[in-house]
Amino acid sequence: MGSLMLLLVLAASCWIAPAYAADPNTPEAIIRLIVRANAEKDMTTLSKYMAHDADVIGYTIGGRKYVGWPAVEREMKDEFEAVIKLEIPILELNVWQRGDIAWFTMELDYISHVGTGANLTSLSLPLRETGVLERRNGQWLLHVWHESSRAKPFLTTAQTNGVASAQKNSVTSETPDLSGGWEIEEEDKAYRATLDKAGNGTYTHKGGMLKTANYANRLWQGTWQQPENDREGGFEVLLSEDGNEAKGIWWYTRVGTRKNIPPREHGGTYTWKRLTPPPAH
Image 1 (tube, one colour):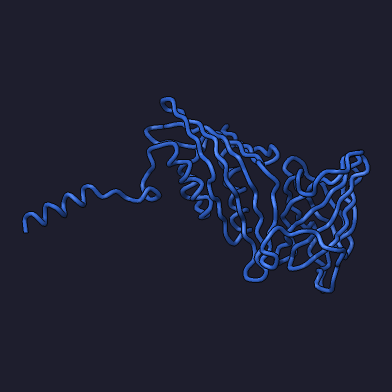
Image 2 (spheres, rainbow, N blue to C red):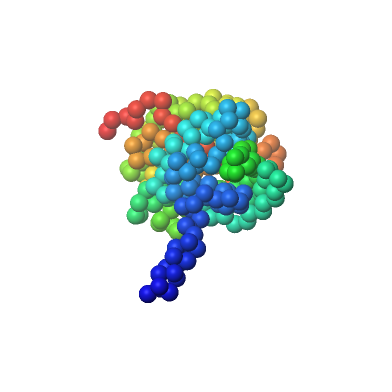
């Protein structure tokens, strides 16, 4: 009996809580914890392990800049509310440490899922990240970070189970009324578009013109042209269920005389937001 009690006491004293539940004490553990908290939409954990200094700076795709924790928190909350599920597998992580300062490089995939069942659509952003952590009062905090695309983003749908590609021009009876004003936000700029019912129209950047090519299961595909800087390309966005917002990707197919740009090879991401309510049916 005495021996059994001793073993139980030893076992209890040697028990270690799971890494996710315990406060990590290494820079690598903190980085993995933050990535996992992001995937699980855990704002409490993200807030705990990211610095809240007023002048802390973070950069995301396209050089978009966040200054201070409130700006990061606001963006993350919007993203969490817009998606059904997030997956963020870490593909590569390297960490270096000198005293109370550590820095890292990381490659990961940021995969957001919207919709369910046959309407499930996923946007995958292959990213690379760098950042700096600082140990304060024994606790490591992410202080500065920067992320950029390491490859072209792509959308997948439950129907195709692969990269969705533009189909022949097709605006069917299933296509909602896309008319009205839209605000389009890229990583480094914003402008406005005015579209007709079929999703064709103009936008206020370089004399831009938009043409819808296909719409199915909220996946909206088309082309764009900018006469003022002699460029054109394609786009693919996923329209929200209420029809008020669309998120997706754009890419070049021609820049000036260069006409051999592979589709989806060079471009970025953007968000479309209605400036007026969707027309009533």
